[in-house]
Amino acid sequence: MKSILLKLLQQGYEFVAFALCCGFVASFVLPIGHFLLFTIFAVFADTVTGLMAAKKQKEPITSTKLKRTIEKIVIYFVAIMIFRGAEITFKLPVPITYMTAMLIASTELWSIAENTKKMTGVNLGTLILRFFKK
Image (tube, rainbow, N blue to C red; front, side, top):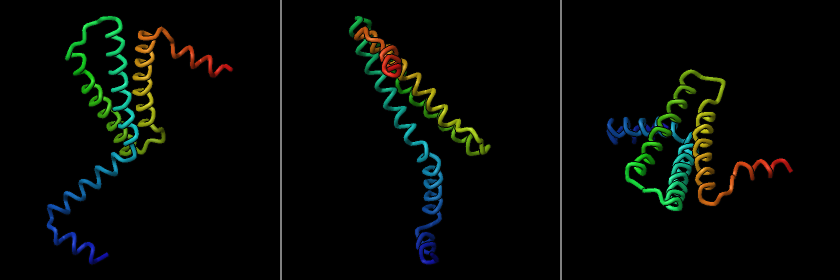
């Protein structure tokens, strides 16, 4: 262990500080990485289905609406990370990070279902409820 520490210090204090910062960021982000990846996937799926629905209904597609995709991803990332920070800082017994990610995902999934209904006329919510009633 002593030899490892000496080798690290030989790299310079800047390297050690950078390694510590990277370790801290990784320990914060890795437990919520799957939420962040799913958020990206859900927002892009919503964007694609929205574009397809707009094309089918012959609505104009503008760059300002497409810019909203990046804004949504950034806002969702910030929300998930803020709630993760609050959960860690205040040692909350309730998993608010999971609840936040679930609300974000349900919003995007609802939007995808609406876009699917615009494209195909099929209400996914009704189909899912019918499936679970059987």
